[in-house]
Length: 117
Image (tube, rainbow, N blue to C red):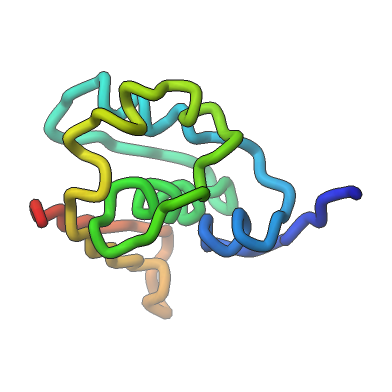
């Protein structure tokens, strides 16, 4: 059965749960964890998946999310030391503020608050 393409969907959880076509960018999680920098600036052109990537990160790190099965079959699942032994998984309470929702905002800006759970 062919997977459907969901255009404009910004929820990683919904795309995975409803079995839509998804281009795997989960190794971005590994890159973030191995980088160990205090701040990471992620720049992408408009309509290039910033919100979907943030949704993926939220699904992985947020203590308030049920991540069971969401990452099965994706590239990050091959790195068991990250998925099973990482002290970061489901340990944070994340708040995401999307300034793109403001009517006069010229670009998409995101502000993240990460608080240990």
